Image 1 (cartoon, rainbow, N blue to C red):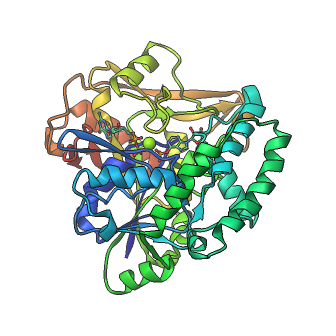
Image 2 (spheres, rainbow, N blue to C red; image 1 turned 90 degrees about the vertical axis):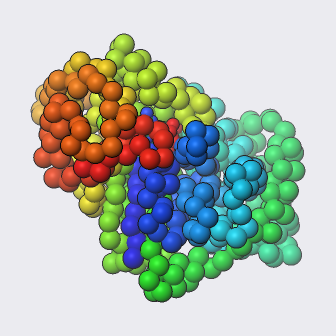
Amino acid sequence: MVDVILGMQWGDEGKGKIVDYFAKDYDVVARFQGGPNAGHTLYLNDKKVVLHQIPSGIFHEDKINLIGNGVVLDVVTLKKECEAVASFGVDFRKNLFISERTHLILPTHRALDKASELSKGQDKIGSTLKGIGPAYMDKTGRNGLRVGDILDKNFTTNYIKIRMKHQRLLDNFNFQEDISAWEEEFFQGIEFLRSLKIVNGEYFINEKINNGMRVLAEGAQGSMLDVDFGTFPFVTSSNTISAGVCSGLGIAPQKIKEIIGITKAYCTRVGSGPFPTELLDETGDFLRNAGNEFGSTTGRPRRCGWIDLVALHFACMINGVTKIVMTKADILDSLQELKVCDSYTINGKETKHIPFQMNKMDIVPHYSSFKGWGSDISKLTTSSQMPEEMKNYIAYINKYLGVTVNYISNGPGREQIISV
Ligand code: GDP
Ligand code: IMO
Ligand code: MG
């Protein structure tokens, strides 16, 4: 049996914290897409850890953590991250497994990401510059190197062949930077990867499921960054939605049970692209400062705005969300008025649908307004303690989405979560 945790907005919904919280109920935690563009934050006894590649179940001693075939892997980040988790006493050599089909992010992928972004000028995606797009392009273009390939004695020669192809592309971009330092680190990372547990991920995970083990699939990014259904072209390069679990781990759809969607109590986005409920005023600044909304991977300030129910409804539909976890409710504590977007006006017409080319449209959001609760909720432990105003806010969202908010996270700490 497999449950899924995924982001319903533009990423950074708090997936890392929630996966870490739920991991105790599972045997396996598996990443199925994305790569080091992800930054999943966990707090362990007040110590902050940000995971980019390793699943967020790694701090539970007895859990298996799998990096699935749908992920793109940066071995340099992986090595650093393994060293970081080891400093917390984690035995990653015992608990971390990597699928041999996982594609590798090469140093030239990072260079190509940078060159491509530079060439776009004002129209840049605002990517994390981690080489994600070029690595997935090589996967679908049938050029890429995979984890299993590192065991081949011709690995270096094969790398050089691809590098030559990439060099021609980099020359076209007139990209002049010397990447030899990245390559040196890359080969050290490859050596490190050889020492880890490389498995046939699809048999590995299906055997676990058939033996009655419980799997938690951990999404990266968010539904509105999905390459098919997000705000294209301002998206990432993988399927971040629940469908990605099947192709990214080798799991059949009927094995999936709960699909747990995570949303903030408001909304953020990092990087370029449409964001209808963005607040470019003091309320936006308040959310950024109170919520410490700065990218976990790049440190960039996140754009902030009100919760967007049109987008969340869309995310519920394309993912089949069965339960919702709302995070960062505590950030709204001191606001007198809260707003939720429940429709858009596009070209003079009101709609509750996400349009085809959001980036080319003038979208006017319509809001319903709610009275804020105006009290500190960070210490609440049960739903009965929730202020009435908060109950009203949640009830409206539940009704609109047709899916229930089952948990509310009221602080970054591991145990700051209320079951509703
Ligand atoms: P992820 O990428 O979805 O895992 O999210 P990030 O880790 O990038 O960003 C979420 C941020 O919010 C992190 O700094 C978390 O520590 C923090 N966070 C998560 N849940 C809560 C919450 O309920 N309240 C507060 N105040 N912070 C939270
Ligand atoms: P987590 O898992 C927020 C955004 C980038 C950029 C776009 C494409 O922490 O929620 P990419 O490097 O993937 O080619 O960038 O996607 N992006 C994220 N935004 N959280 C993330 O991950 C993100 N991963 C990518 O900012 O706009
Ligand atoms: Mg993040």
